[in-house]
Figure (tube, rainbow, N blue to C red):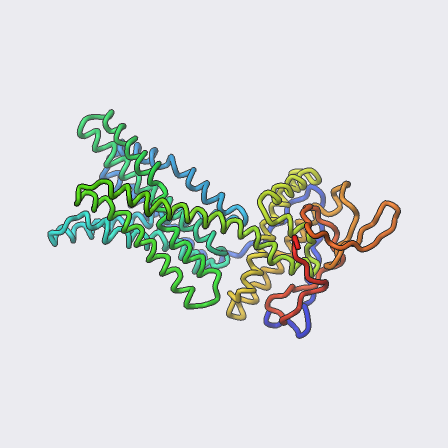
Amino acid sequence: MADTPPGGALPPPPAPAAPPPGGPTPRMPLRRLGWRRFLALAGVVLLIAAGALFMVFTLGESLGAEALLVGLVAAILPVPVLVSCFLWLDRYEPEPLKYLIFCFAWGAFVSTAISLLVNETGARLFDDLGLPAALTAVLVAPFIEELTKAAGPLLVLIFRRREFSGITDGLVYCGLSAVGFAMVENILYLGGYGYRTGVEQYGPATGAQQVIAIFIVRILLFGFAHPLFTSMTGVGLGVAARTADRRVRVLAPLAGLLLAMILHGTWNLLPSLAQATGQTVIVLYGYIGVMVPIFFAMVGLAIWLRAWEGRLTERTLPDYVRAGWLTPPEVAALGSLGRRHAARTWARRVAGDGGVKAMRGYQFAATRLALLRDGMRRGLDRKPAERERTAREERELLEAISAYRSFFVGRDPQAPVGVWDGQRYHLRFPDGSQRPVEAPDDPVVPIPVVLAAPPAYPPPGYGPGGWHGPGAPWHPGR
C-alpha cells in the first residue's frame, strides 16, 4: 500500500456477485504451485519418507516384529488426545492441515532419526572416554532433540510466515512436532524396555505387565514432558512472527530454544541424580516443584492466548466497520467461541447447511483479516513487495467476506430491514418510515444487514496516517 494516493483510499474493488441460494460456498483463491515450490515440497516429502523408513528399519531390527507392534499400538493410544488438545487451542484460526501434518511427521521421523544417530554417537564417545553413557541423556539428548524438533516449525516460519500468526501457532506447530517425536520414542520404551525385556526375562505375561507400568509412568504421568519442553521454543517462534524488530526475530527463538534445552536437560538429570545419591525422592521433588508448576503456567498462557485471538477481532476489525465493510454486530459476534457458535446456529436456521459452511468461512476469513491488520499495525512487512502482497491478501479477504455475507443478508424474516453506512443504521419501520439509528453500546446479535454502498478501500494501514474511512470511530462494548 505504499502507492496509496495522497489524501485517501484506493478505488474500491468490484463488489462480488451474490451466489445463488444453495450455490457453492465461496473459496479463497489458491496459490499456484511453481517449480521451485514443487522441488521444495518434493525434497521435504522425501526427507520425511527417508526418516520414516530409517526409523521403521532401526526399530524393527532392534525390537523384533512382535515388540515393535506392541510398542506401536501402545504409543499411538495417547496421540489422538494430545493432538486434540492442540487442535482445540487452534480453533479461532485453524492452521492448514498440511502444515500440521508436516510438523507432526517431522517430529516423528526426521527429528527422531537424527536424534537417534547423534545420541548413539555420543554414547559411544563417552564410553570410549571412560565416562558413563548415561551422560548422553543430560549432555547430548536435550540439545539435539530440542533442536531437531524445532527445525520443522522453524521451516514453516521461514517459508510460510503468513501461516505463523503468533504464539498460539508456535505452540501448536511445536507441540505437534513434540507429540510426533514422543510417539516414536515411546515405541522404543514400550516395545523394547517394556515388552521385549519382560518376555526375554520371564515371558509374555511379564512383558505385558512392564508395558502397562511404563505406559502409566511415561505416558499418563509424564506424557506432557516433550510438548512442554518444545513449547518454550514455540513461544519464541511466535514472538518472532509478530515483531518487526530484527533483533527480536533472532533472539526470541534462540532464547526459547535455550530454555527448552535447559528444561529437557534438567528433566533428564533428575533420575541420574536420584540414582547417584540413592535418594529417589529427588525425582518427586523435581516433578512436583518444577515441572508441574511450569506445565500449569504454560496451560494458563495457552488458554489466555486463545482468548486473545478472539479479542483481537474486536480491536482491529472496527477499522472495517468505519469503512463500511462490516457492521458492529458482526464484529461483536466474532469475539468469543460462544458467540461464533451462536452465529453458526443462526446461519443454519436462515440458510441451512450451506449457511453454516458460509458462516464458518466468514469467521475464518474475518480472523485472518484481523491478524493481517494487526500485522500492518506492527509493521511486519518491511519491503514494498511484502506490503503489496499484504494489500492483495487484504483485498482477497474482504472480497471473500463480502461473498460469505451474501448468504445471510436479507434471509432472516425476524430481522429488521436496515442499511449500515459505516456510522449508523438506517432502519425501515412497519409504517414505511425510515430513520437513522445509532449502533447500540453492546451489539452482540450476529445478524448481517445490508451495507450502504461498495465500501471505500483500504481501511487505515499502510495508507496515509489518520485516515479512518467514512464514519466516526466505533468500539464494541463501549
